[in-house]
Image (cartoon, rainbow, N blue to C red):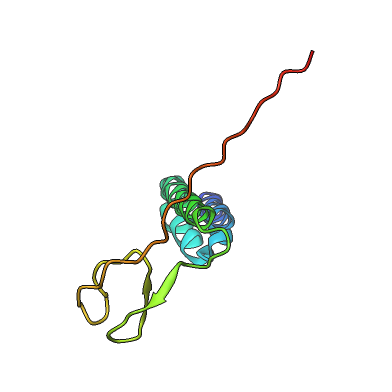
Amino acid sequence: MELYWIAALSGAVICGFIGSALLSEYDKAGTGFLCGFLLGPIGLILVWAERDKEIRAASERRAVAVATPTGVRDETPCPFCAEPILRAAKVCRYCHRDLPAPSTPPAREPRRTVTRHFR
């Protein structure tokens, strides 16, 4: 009977360490250990699902970072409250006032490329 308890406890500890290893990259090692230790293989399934959720969130953050590679936003100060707002904003998010239409320079004609055929 003692051997059963030793095997069950060691199995729980092993599941805890596996859960901890799966979530250690996302600063959730303690959560992974508790789920694996207390719930065993079912806890490992839950930890794996949490890991997948963290991977998707990280890829979404990378996608946003790719959209603004330098991290610099196109901002301008609000003419009413002087807080930084996006240049394309129509309403200030701080003072909630309507902003004047942005003045845009006249559009330039696209360059025409001349192709030459050599013989």
